[in-house]
Length: 264
Image 1 (spheres, rainbow, N blue to C red):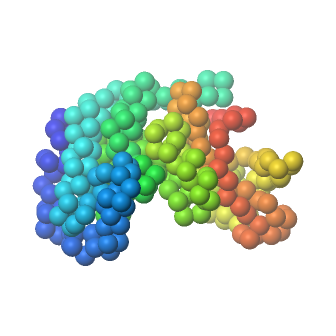
Image 2 (tube, rainbow, N blue to C red; image 1 turned 180 degrees about the vertical axis):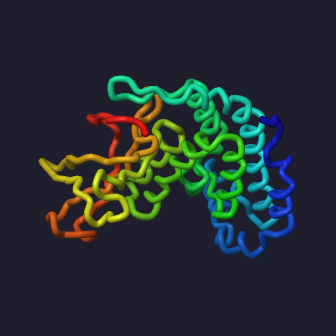
Image 3 (cartoon, rainbow, N blue to C red; image 1 turned 90 degrees about the vertical axis):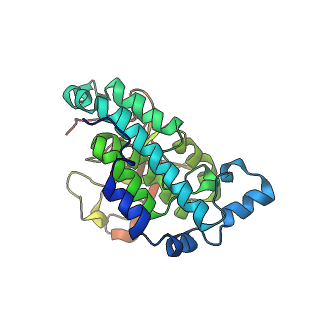
């Protein structure tokens, strides 16, 4: 594949970023009065050190991230994509083995601070608006969709910012941002995919702990990566069997005590 910066060499993306996107309107709405920058001035919280304080700074901040994605995608991912595709995944004794190249580049994005596009800055994320996330991911998907999916899956857990309590957010989100876990949504079951209110995986609370029993299917990255664990955001039934959608709850599950039945 072509070796270059996949952001700076893409005239179409440059046109969108420089001329088509109304950054003034978008940034003013998304940055919400530039509260992160104000919070940094008050507290010195290093997680907010790069928070923009005006529209111009915000656009430059987003462009720096695009450039980082373009560099890693075009100069590194693109050069190993064919070899990774040829090797593929291995399945041994209920475990999935990833090519070493995938593992290395996955952690390289995390180490560069580029993986956590969806998370707020106060948790260590990049705090990007949706348009900027889409541009970042498009750059990476040009080089290799499997790496793009692996990194995008990490950002699924941004749902914790909305629905988890503060203790869970402060405990788990930084771990996920650091790349210590892969992430998947545990929704689909053998007989229930789009009909989520009918899922059968059961959650029972015993002595203050929750135990989940059931089978999930098509769980991208649920197995972790070569020894590192995964986090499964699992939908399970806490109500009666006929309780429908109202009887479902959402759990954060570490990938322990499980077996991978096969890879697709």
